[in-house]
Length: 89
Image 1 (cartoon, rainbow, N blue to C red):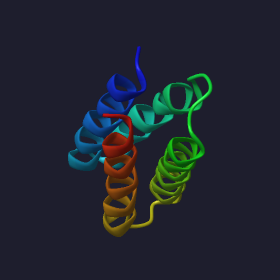
Image 2: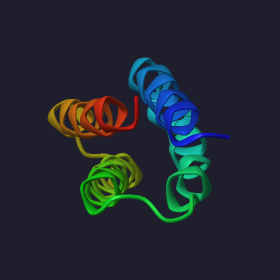
Image 3: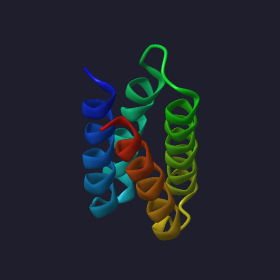
Image 4: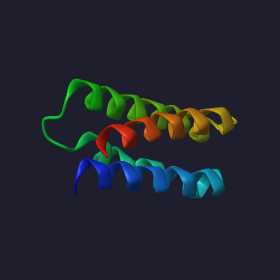
């Protein structure tokens, strides 16, 4: 899978999780960890964007796990993923 395809898949999963109850969203988000970590060598800017998306998604997962609101965190994760997507197109 190319970086572009991976970033798109992560974006789609984030949008799906955002609409789901926390109990359904957590497994979706947990499934993204392996996707985001993958990939070979990439320019530093792409690696930074991928890492930012990963960290933002982790923050969403932590909030959901703790029963805290995640609306703003979803926005940050989606924004970070969109940045990644722009860089790998």
